[in-house]
Image 1 (cartoon, rainbow, N blue to C red):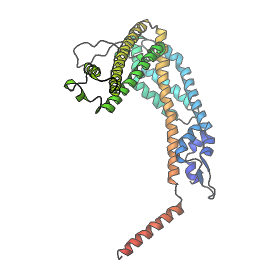
Image 2 (image 1 turned 180 degrees about the horizontal axis):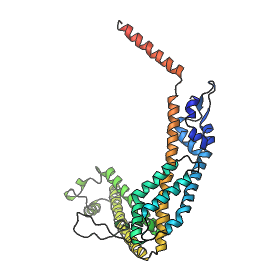
Image 3 (image 1 turned 90 degrees about the vertical axis):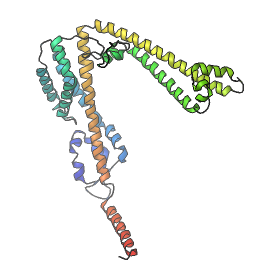
Image 4 (image 1 turned 120 degrees about the horizontal axis):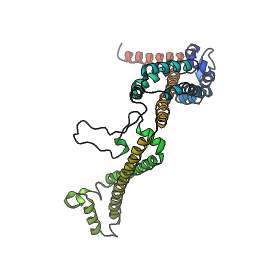
Length: 347
């Protein structure tokens, strides 16, 4: 690979000096040329594992924390009647001021775009709600336009809150209840998978619908067939039918348990939302919603940089995978084969 092509990536080498040495070494025979130190498939791991690149993530995160600290008091001080347009102008300017001096691989204006995109998608509506009604929250159940009958909430998924999303409150106050539900849902999924696999395996054998009265594989018909089977000679079939019934029973009980657990969590949520103080709402919205969402987006910027550099280095390696003499030799070989074929054809 020519030095000129490597130098085209100076933006990365200036910020991560050791990264170039981790990826490339001098070509053993050609002065002014480089070779890739690792296999092309390992470029991404080499980039992520480089000490300077890892430090870049720390610098980037430090800058984000610095920006949060600089604007935190301003956000906590928001009161009804403030101007959201003025707020985002101030937030954007302060963000640029921080990220333009942090010498990060991520461009300050890419960070600014992330803030503006989040503002347009979510934060703008939140700020207008606060400006008009203050730091207040209310749970409600969205009603489908096509249904005339009012939908009643039975699970946490049935209720929403525009300013303070339900998952945030669950994670903050009801993590234990959430984990119990998740565990029950995972067990349900396992049992449903086992049942589906059993039905597929035995569809043309013990669980063939033709084995049962009226071609219906109901629980009652299965139990009747089990009573008619010989416990000694038909042990395998009895075991399959019993496993089928056991799995169906476990699934039914699990669904009932999940329904009860979710209703219990819903009841707790309704009480908690009504009990939240203004200080609680501010903390959860600012820290757990706004700052946390932006942190995820900005982390995505670092991942994008990693992927971008990996793609560029891999493209270089692929472009120069064959040397010019090798290409010339291959062309000469192909020309010779074509000439031989033409000669055989009388040309």
